[in-house]
Length: 116
Image 1: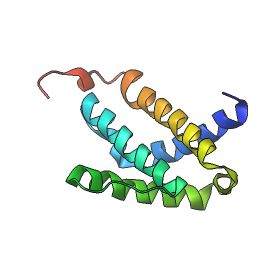
Image 2 (image 1 turned 90 degrees about the vertical axis):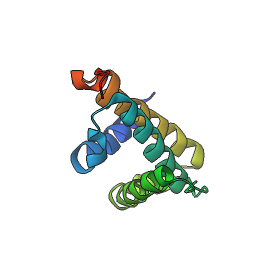
Image 3 (image 1 turned 45 degrees about the vertical axis):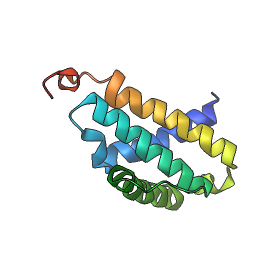
């Protein structure tokens, strides 16, 4: 991954960490599902692809994805210069980073409590 991609991922990550409350679920499996759902739907919106909204969870993730995609388009003009392949690569890198920060690299021991 080159420095430009890392910088762009960091900008998107910073926005999520400062502006999005959905990152604070108390269980690791909830965080995994939400990260996948929201960031995949955000990628689909940014790429102009259809977004599944059939289940209540899909609709919940879709709403957060719409807000996130709109914010990204408004704040990061460089997004409009990327093609679909670059957006997908960027969003996968962002998902990997958010998964690390909120799940695998988190020091929050409550994430792994079996009773939740």
